Figure 1 (cartoon, rainbow, N blue to C red):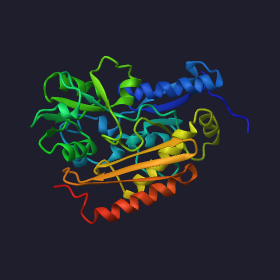
Figure 2 (cartoon, rainbow, N blue to C red; figure 1 turned 180 degrees about the vertical axis):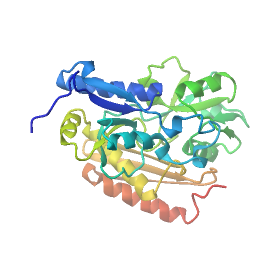
Figure 3 (cartoon, rainbow, N blue to C red; figure 1 turned 90 degrees about the vertical axis):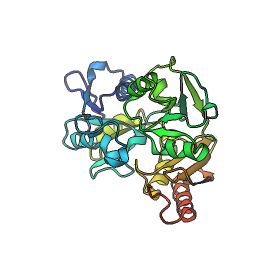
Figure 4 (cartoon, one colour; figure 1 turned 45 degrees about the horizontal axis):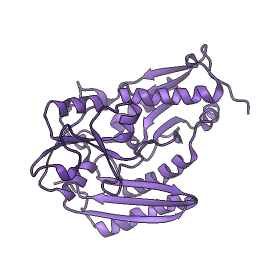
Length: 318
C-alpha cells in the first residue's frame, strides 16, 4: 500500500502525558518519524492529555499508588482519546502499561531501549551499602521498596511520588537520605548534573520494560501501522514482549513487586525474573535462556515456576 504521510495541513496527532519526561519521549517519537520520512515538525501535533495519575486535585500525592488504583491511572484517558480518534498514536513509558490493551488498540511499536538500570540518587552517598542503619529512603515503587527491604530491613522507606523534578526537590528538601530513579529518564532529560550512581541489574533487577518507549495505535489503522513500522526497534520489541509475557502470567500490576529483564546476545535470549513479598520478607528469582523466538514461552514458563515456588498468599500486603 502507499503510505499517506502526515503534513502541516493534516498532522499526525501524538498523545502524551504532560510531564517533562513524557514530553521528551513524545518529541523523540516525532523526531524519529520526521527523520524516517523527511517531514518537518509541523507535520506532527503533540497533544497533552491529563491523566488521573497526574491530577493532584483528585489524588493525594502522599498516598501509595496501590491504594488509588493500578497502571490505568497513567493511560486510561489517553487510550480513550485514541479510541475516539482525537489522537492518532499514544506514546507511553512501557513500564506504565497494563499487559492487556483495550479492545481496538494495539501496542506493537517500541523505540530503541535506553539504559535499563535504576539510579541511586543522593547528595552525600553513592550506594545502598553506604546508607546508615535506619536511614530514610524515598520511593513510590513497591518493587524498589521490597528489593531494598530484602537487602536492608533496617531502612525506613517512605512514600515519594511525583515526576522526576518533584522527587529531586523532595530529596533536596531533606525528606529522605536517598531516592531512586530510572536511569533512562535522567538520560532522556539530559540531567547529567543529578548525583546518580547506576545500579547493575544483578544488584537491583529493574521494572518490566524499564527504559522502553512504547507507541500505541488503533488496531484498524493500517496507515499509521505502516508509518510506525519505520521506527520500530525489533530487538527492543522482542525483549519487551518476553518481559511483558512474564508479567502477564504473574497477573502483575502496580500493586505487585515484580522485576524482570530480557537481554539478547547473538540469537540467544536470557530472561531474569524476580517476585517479592511487598514487605521484603521473601523473594524468589529465576532465569531462562533460549532462542529469541521462544521469548514468550520462556516468560510464561519462568512465571509459572515462580508462582509455584512462591505459594499462595505470597503477594499479600501486610
